[in-house]
Each structure stands twice: as C-alpha cells, then as structure tokens.
Image 1 (cartoon, rainbow, N blue to C red):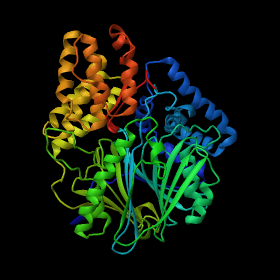
Image 2: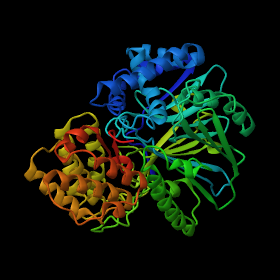
Image 3: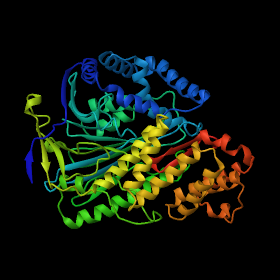
Image 4: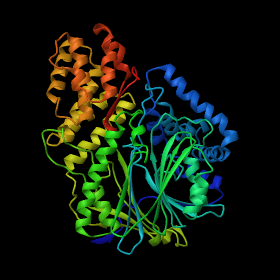
Length: 550
C-alpha cells in the first residue's frame, strides 16, 4: 500500500462569525451550487398544480413562522444565498424539502417521498479509538458526486467542524466530526408527524455541533428542541459512547450504547424501538429497504470479524464493496448497504483527526483506493492538513460493468424526476444491458417496464409489457413482486385478457392488496388515464408510489 497525492478533494477552511462563514461558503460554491439544487427540486416535481400548491404553501408557512421560531436558520440561509447570488426562497426550499416530505407524505401520497437512506457503523479500532463509518444514500447521483468537497467551519468560539458535502448544501449536517472528539450522521425516518412548531433539522444539527462537548451536553441540547418531522441522529464520543437519538416531531427517544472491543454496531433507517409503527407510513417499502441492507451489513461484518483487522480502512472496503453475485433471479436478492444511490462513503476517527473518503462518481463502491485526511484540527492552516490517495489495489473489487449499470439506474431516476423521459428510457435500457448477468439487471428491467406502463398508450405494446411482467413474476423480491402483480392485474384489464392469478392471495403486502381492491372499482377503459400520471417509481429505494391511492 503506497500513498500518493492524486486529484485532491477540494478543501475549504472558513474562520469568522457563523453568517460570515456561510456567506464565504456561498461565494466558494457560486459556480456549481445550482446542480444539486435543481436535482433536489426535481424530487418534488408533480404534474398537478394542486399538489404543488400544498407543497409550496407548507414551505412558505414554515418560512413565515421561522422568522420568529428559528431566526438563526433564516440568517444562515440568507448569508449563503447572498454568497451564491440566488434568491433566499430558492435556497431555503432545498433545505426544507426533506423535512416537508418526511412529514406530510403520509397524508399526501401524491408527493413523491424519497428516502435519505443511510448506514452508520461504529466500532473501536485496534488502538481502542472510536470509528464512525457513514454511508449516505440520496437520489443526487450526477450532481452531489460531481461537486463534492470537504469543509472546516470555525465560528464564534465553537469547535472546528469538519464535514464532507457538495456545492449547494451549506450546512455540515449530513455528516460531521468536531474538534471536541464527536462524530455525527443524520438518518431520515418517516412517520405521519408534521410539527409546525419544530425547527428545520439541518439547523438543529448545526447548533448541536456548536454546543456539544460530550454525551451530557448533547442530550441537554437535543431535548431542548423539537423537529418538524422524523429524523435519527447517530453520534460517537471520544470515550466510546454512542448516542442514538430519534426525533418524531415533539417526541424524542434515545439510547446510549457503550462500545466494546471487537464489536460493531450497525444502524440504518429504522426508528429504534418503534419498528411496528415504522411499517405503517409511506414509503411502504422502506421496511423492506432497511431490512435488506441490515441483513447484508451483518453478513459483511461476519466476514470482517473473521479477518480480525480492526481498522477503518478495512471496514470502509468491506462496507462499500457490493456482493455482485451473478444470478438469473432476484427473488432471494438483497440490496447491499452501499446502494444504487450512495453518493458519499466515509469514516471519521476524531482521536487521530483522521477521515477517509471514497472519491469519484457515484455509486461509491470501493475502487481499490480512498482519500485520507489527517491532522485535520491541529493544523495551523489549510496547507498543513495532509490529504493523500491511498492505493490498496490497482484492481477495483467492483466489476466495471456492474458499477456502470448501477450508475445508469440512478441516472434513469434522475432523468425521470426531471421529466426528461427520453434520457430516462435510455439510461434504464443501458442499465439492463450492463447488468444482464446480475439480479440487479432484473430489477432494472422491472423498472423499465414500469416506465413503459406509464408512457405507453398502444394496446399491442401493452400486451408486450404484460408478457414481460408475467415473465418477471416470482423472480423479484417479495415487495417488488407484489408491485409486479399489481401491474399484471392492471394490464390484463386494460387489454381485455382473463387472468389465472388469484391476486388477493398472491399479493402479500396488506396495503398493496388494498390498492388492488380499490383499483377494481375503476372502469378498465379509464384505468390508465386515471392512474398513470400518479405512479412515481423510486428506483433507489426499491419502491413505487401511487398518488391516486392512500
């Protein structure tokens, strides 16, 4: 293993008041900030003015209340907006959208709720130092990964805050490490909670990073605040303690864990202690999505423990190397912790002032090398922070066709969100071709057929789509197989074919079974025109939303 400097990640260090630093970060981001913001806005695209009115109305209401309830958020976003030269409302929209969607999609299924999917691993390394590995999954492939950067903020006597992010996102709230020996990752949760008296989660996290010195001060701060919707905060402290803190609006739940030698703790998007309620809210497939990643993470960790190499480098490699098992069925397939939409993969070691990061295009599968930052907090200036590319192997453990195929799937979703259907179809077909030997190719082909169902109006072509769905039946994971059965039922009615399937028995998911029953009340001649524009595929979380049903 030899170190070398190669394509360094942009690193910024800002010292000043909080508003000065956010302004300076805005100036730094000026040329590239819009790429992520445009993609974030596209996540909320709907064909219906009434739904858009609800969404924008909710954001306007929160901003109006914010002048009194959370003026610090308003000031930071105003400073950043001034730096990039963009309207305040445009920037604020991007930071409030995850809160809004997480809270009100339970009542408005037409809103295309997406999941800021996440994984956090905690362990003690060979030197008994706490390590926090964070995988960030977010449908911003093609923007977040192209303008990634590292930032140190030093404001108003608070600690130095080091984080990895992207141009357009000014808050260090997705992941962070502080000079007080604290690490943090934010995980999205879903419920039916929408608390108008809450504070935007990014602002809560920033204040937490400024104030927290240990477990006691972190809990004291978090218990003083309410969130707008549902979030999980995962923190490590230099004494080896782990804090799992869940906000559900006004409700707060937490768990303290003491890390032990030779053990690893894994967390994703479950609301710890409320797994039963977790399954009741949109997205309906989030339980399946989380169970898959948890199952594969635990398998990876069994292998990791047998190797008995307790380093952050070894953990990063095993956590971000996909399974890549070739198979002509996806029935028993599970999604890896590093997913189709993994836009960041990193580790923090506060005691060594060290961070590892996988650079380059998403998804962030391990490429045989990673970037290493050291001397992060004790450096006298930005030039004293060491940044090297560490080459573990000249051969990536991830097959090129596999990564290209998975990236194409994510780009297909990006273009679909932007309503660029030509490129969406092009990318999903490329993905299917690249992944033809893998279960992921079956997943890709399934979503290709979903795209076709939405856009296709000709009976002959619909019959071909029906044949394709029938061929895929029982080759998909259970939850997607239920969706496949729904499409078969729809198409059989639309083309006038009789069915041999007992759908009420075949569809396992209770909510989807209810959807099937409700759609039977729609005349066959009106079915497509009634439902097609309300169907919102979400490839990155293996789900489909139906805005015409609740």
